[in-house]
Length: 138
Image (cartoon, rainbow, N blue to C red):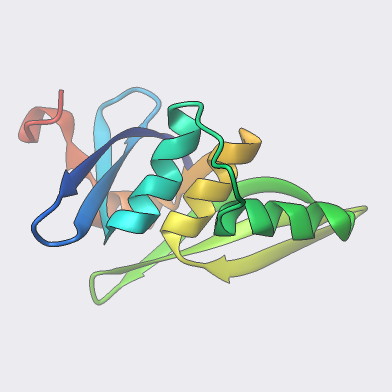
């Protein structure tokens, strides 16, 4: 697994779509993941230090996990199939590790709120990654 951070979020307001750009820690490879605008907002809020007046889905997930005695460990972008990214949210409860299947946008939104690391599988990085020098990412 390769640790990444959210480099930026771009919005296409005409299509109600956005792209979240995950970059490795050296900023040499980036993975673009297309998401809907509401999910982009859920990711952007913690990056901007904004706490919404009412809980969003990511806040609900954190609250439920904490009330059940679990901790958010990390978000993982596990695989890509037919141009669809698959992710999991990793929790721990005592000695138990729990992997919960979810959309990448949800995993990222939760991880950002808890300041948990985000990882991309090496195979996903190899398949979907864009080298910084081969793109307009700077």
